Image (cartoon, rainbow, N blue to C red; front, side, top):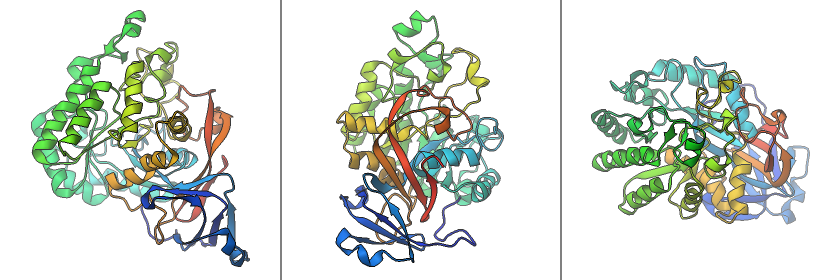
Length: 443
């Protein structure tokens, strides 16, 4: 579903009350037990229990959120939907179902489709397919270079005008600095962020896991921290020169965080993200027989993992993004050396992020801010708030619900996650988009 201010054609909107929940909305510093009235896909009123009686009539649909958190719907700025061209991994429909199950009401999809999204025709295909097959809001991200080959700029302005909210070559860093300079100059003019996978590929080469004593133990080629850190340094220098907004993907090392922290102190327009797997796992956790532990950037050292948590705590890291990267079972059965990088993350983002709250790196309000309000600001989409008059994109979740993650909980077309069969705490109860409940208790 594309961004809209009105309900789908033919859809009958009921006036809805969400009652008895604890409402957390960082956009207006709201943290209290209060009830919410929805009407015509908008949030129209907040009221206390003492005033609830007058609302209890047949004109309202009642959603009881007792014992649960009510917050703005989550927004993920880093999702791979694989459509067009790679539907054996994921489709726009299955990806949107996974998003809804994870509490995400809006997702931005990366351009590494087949063919890559480097032109308005593919952007329009994504938006038109989403309009038919998705109940969450889907925002395309356009490629920086044609076919993501890093040799010639794509028609960036045309793709932004067609509906893209940012530009990125995703898993391929733009190694030609002149091209990146030109892309950032265009992005500055158009007012969209450049989303960068920072990597010095000559250092990472054929690496498949973090370069450490574990890569040596398993006799596998490693990816050093410096490959990411050098990439970040180069991109920050160009962003400083062009005054563009640079958003750095999936930060994974202590050195990267220090570089970004220093850039922010200089007043540069830099934002960045961390993934739940990078602040919940490290290379000590890897089961070398399970390629679902293989991702890029790789799981780093324990010290790097702690540095990411502290970077989240002190605000150096702006948002949480999943880097949801589905692959088929056949592809992920090729072994650690040959299987593709990436894991799914939409359905597990909430419980894994809640670990930061339980371990006192964040409070609930800060976690929601990183999953909703700040991503909306970075991408400049009209979501991520529960203010009166805003579009009713809402998630209701139980922060204490404990369960074993089985395939029954996975709505993605792929099940490549190292968290399968693990016990998680935190479950989405309902996901609401444009005032309509689109997901409820695994249904």
